[in-house]
Length: 121
Image 1 (tube, rainbow, N blue to C red):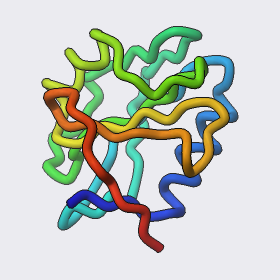
Image 2 (cartoon, one colour):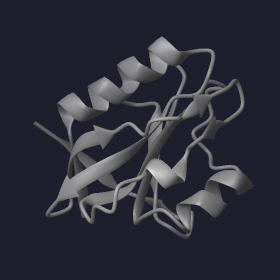
Image 3 (cartoon, rainbow, N blue to C red):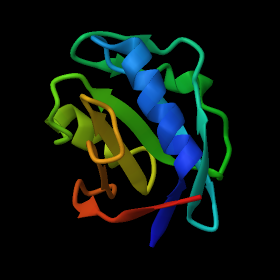
């Protein structure tokens, strides 16, 4: 089972609030299935309906296990574009939705199926 440190989820939510009404996006770093850090890519462009990553800036780093982005709309459901990205960029993907709190997010695997990610201290 995947886990995420509480302080990382808080950072993601605060970053999403700061980017609102635009989307926020980053990548997830983990060790032993514990997400402990986010990775910001230079050249990432945030808009009201999408985040565009400059994947040429993504390091070759096997501790990067997936992605996170926000949905300002309030619905943490992946779009087709999200599903396409999920299938190419890792095993765990998180969508945080407005109002960006501990209850307004969901996690998905690379196939777009919802998975459980436990919050830990």
